[in-house]
Every structure is written in C-alpha cells, then in structure tokens.
Length: 311
Image 1 (cartoon, helix red, strand yellow):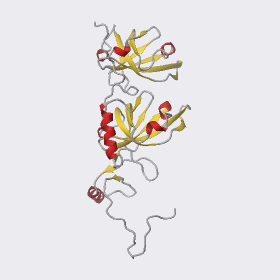
Image 2 (cartoon, helix red, strand yellow):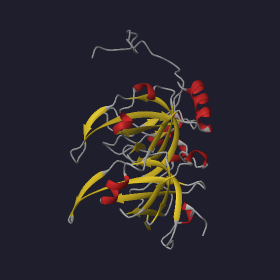
Image 3 (cartoon, helix red, strand yellow):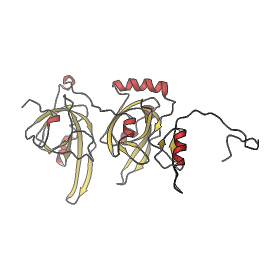
Image 4 (spheres, one colour):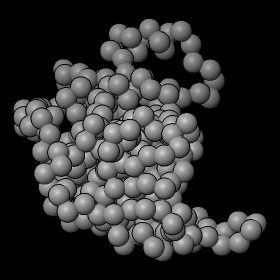
C-alpha cells in the first residue's frame, strides 16, 4: 500500500488506510436529540492531492476532541476511521462513501502543507443554463456574478434558533439568472462583498423547485468572493459588457409576491400557446426579451392617457 491511500479509492472494502488531505470546509457543531439521548456532531470536507473529496463526520466525544484541531485550509493525516455509504440527502460531494471518526482516531496536522500541492478547494462548476435543465432537488457548484442583493435579515428557524439570511440575484455567461440564499455568518458579510459585478464561487448549492429553480447555500457549502479561478475573469468581462441586459430568470415572482414558474418564449410563441386554450381560473406566466416598439399616450377617443396613475 502507498504511504497515503487515495481518497477516490476508499470504499467499504478498504480496511486499513491512511489519507493525507486538506480541510476545505468545516460545518459548525450541531446538537441533536434522539430516542437514546442527546448528542452532537460536526463534519469536514477533505481533499487530497489527486483531487479526491470525501466527507468525514465526528460524533460525541470525537466532536469535542477534534473540532478546534481541524481548522479549514489546514492539511492533516487521517486513519482509524470507518467507511460507510454516503447519504446524498445531506452530503453534496460526489464520493459514494463517507468517513466516520471516533475519539480514538489517529489525526495529525502536517507542517508541510504549503508545499504539498493540495488545492485549497475543488470546484465542479455548471452553468445556470444547465441548472435550468436539472430536476430538483440537486446540488451544484456555481461561478456567478451578483446582479443585486437584499440586506441580511434576522430570522428564527423552525427549531427556534436565531440566524441570518440574505438573498442574492446572480447570473452567468449563459444569460440566465437565479436567486440564491446564503445563511448565518456568510449572510452577515459586508454589503460591499455583494455589490453588483462581484464574482462568487459557490460550492454545494442546493437547488430547489419552489417557484422554478432557486438555490440555497447551507452550512455544508463553501463561498469564495472574487475567486482566483479562470471562470471569474471571463465572467467579470461578460458582466461589464452585458450587466444591464435581461437574462432568463429561473426564479420567477408573481404579482402577489409568491414564486411561480414562467415559460421563456417569443411573443409569437406566447400567442400560439394562449390560442391552445387556458383553463378557466388558471393563470399562465411568460418571460421574453423584446425591444419596446411603441408607448401609447392617447386613448382610442383621442383623450390624453398619462403613463402613471395616483395609487
């Protein structure tokens, strides 16, 4: 066996192994209660020099022992853990398996991490146009530019915990845009980090289907502002030239404020779609990109028609 076992080769058939990996993300300690009592857990995402990624979880005493040690961006060696099938409901990494470590795990920090050639983070970007064709729920990595943002808002979760959320409208070079919500400490970053034109790399965005497609970056994800990736420079150039242009919106909003799915069509396609009949009481929403051809300022009887009214 090589000195360090490749993460991509880990499976339930791997009995004895030792990996060397960088902590690319660390979730906060989460407390829970089951029929057997109270417990706690946190997880980290690990990346090795060959690009393999896997999630590792620490429960109970292991959470107390290793949480402060496993600082994000640092490199460690790991052994004496168990392998189990990955639960894709909670894990957004592509590996089929996850690791679990107890308090007796053998974990040591590496002092030579700067020269070890392990990336700080590994992205698998998809375009928003590709997202529009996916069936939610799913998880993706995005390289996007901010078109607009909402202020951070304090909220209380269903479990009674106080946190913050912030909604972003983001776009990419596919001329598609989508709403993404970020939470907790990420949402509380300065507004300057989200000014229009800012490029973001988002890893582990959960895509939902509430009113079309929308994203949510939970605690298990990762966000980088102005990332040093090739896609960022291309996106910044695109936004400088096309930032004011209309994009196909994946996260539609109805007049009443609730989200609805909208059909992207030309005007002639809309007319054809409507001619096929709409059920009584049913509403249909469309989206198009068009040039303003005429603004009518008079009624049919010739009387002046203002462009506004007193609300």
